[in-house]
Image (tube, rainbow, N blue to C red; front, side):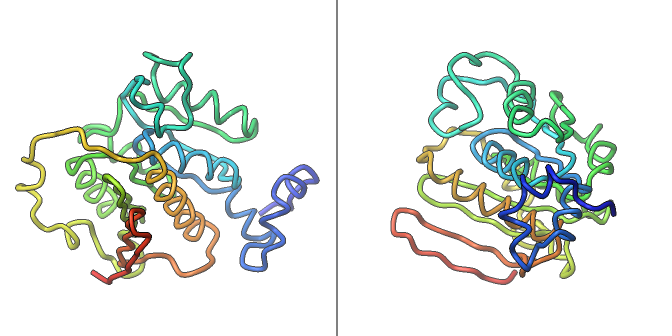
Length: 238
């Protein structure tokens, strides 16, 4: 890998001074690629932190548009963007944060038809969705391709994070085996305070950086849960 240039050394100096990352870890991040599936509250936080950390190529995948109810927690967007595609508006905002980062846009979302082709071009996937069907789809795709992915979910005051399909080869189906029953549940809008996706998205981003740069102990086959109402947390193996 090439040496960091002067601009990189200045931009990422607060990371490279960490012995767990250093210049080698930063070079790994700059040469890495991540697909973010979902650009809501979780995706907004994940995309912001991975862009800031220097991930070289980021895929933004979401078929949705910006709506007024999004603004309470989806910090990438503003009132002026209401009704516009999330992938395009997120890319514009993120590109202003880092002009050297490459962003690939997938406004069609992740589907059975395109999922494997899209995912095959990335080192890692990060789940920022809000439904079981897409998570099982990500699980199937990453299992077939042999790629790790970071799972995250939120609701009310609580959230969860885990790393799937890494060294321990644990899958989403191991954590939630009742696939047909869960996918058959009707979609409904659930309440959540805006800080929850911020916290969980930041943890997902941290897990992604661990995997890409090769430091720390990822939540490989371990489920981290936190309740912000009581600020209690737990980690279990599955």
